[in-house]
Image 1 (cartoon, rainbow, N blue to C red):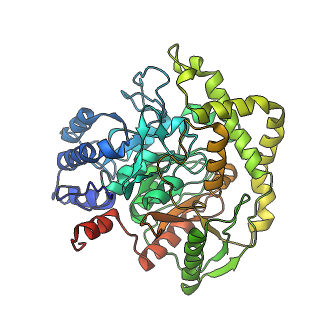
Image 2: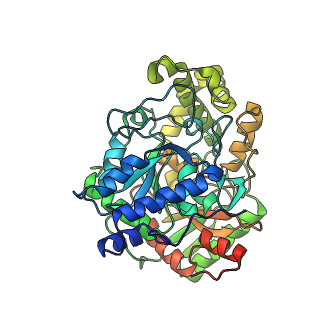
Image 3: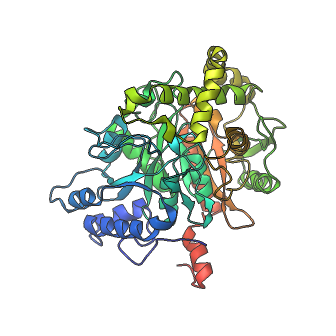
Length: 479
């Protein structure tokens, strides 16, 4: 069953840019759009389960304030993922393993994010510590896909993906340490750009990683919203190490050299996803881009094992340091089997960790000879279509969970290690009607290339929204 929050209210079917324009024109007010988003949240959250913490009264107060807060998106409702610090809201990171406490101040990311004018309605749900590609906590419940609530919304930015796709808000914060922007974008039919390392600020806890694999970003329903967000964020905070993305508003003119890969280090993607990838490659060829097909991914065979050990090391640090970081109420017995399994795997393999980190740290340099002749790498975002809720149940045996997880999330972790940007675009649907994302990656700092290509693809194949599916189910012609 498709679950849509879209309604004939102040938000309508507008994207974030559309809401901004409507507010500026006086067609709607900030109060109108915030109240519409709150009503939509209350309508669909009982089934989608994407809400981690609600701050509706604070959002109402901000929207009603006589003094404008400034920022291009002033008044546009959003959610912040529940692993970023927002003043007055707890940060529970997808678990209930300690007692919540409100943050005393914004973290570095929230200061930038909310300075663009976005109004946070609260926190969106994620998988426990973001380790899984689905959010199905044994007590907090599963975050479901609005295209079909029997299926997963992907993760770890699961609530963000579900709410934006369903029409609750037009834009939401997401972050990505192994695909967590791109995976829910793919599962929910959204635009999800993981930016270059350092493009947006990180909170202090994420800056402490030996390799900074996490990048903040957003999920949206249109390329122009994603491009506008990065343009506005650069006005607030800009990395001195990266050239600015700038104001990208249209397709690029340059014809690109595109490498196409349908096989990960682990396996070939499913036949259905492979067909979508090849059709996307054919579309690029018709557009005049030069496309070459690679027989194997440009990634060393050791990559999966090294990344898995690094991922496990993060769990080891969180579990072993839980009381110090989260307080005396921290209870490891409340953690799920994936978190605890990763911690045990790291403990048993600590001797291998220095070599794994060294290989990951040099991966971009070692890959460069294999990809330097291409502007863009095209792969599927995920190796298969979104699975049913329960396929990656975190209460199952760890060996089962990790085998299924590594099998499905085969393509996205690469850019987290190299630091390169990558974008998932909703360019297909499965036989069952679920979105299928295609992923385009480029060299460090070349987000503008990806956005220009995304505009071009969006013009050629307009992205299908959940309203189209909902209208088809009800027999209403889409507007």
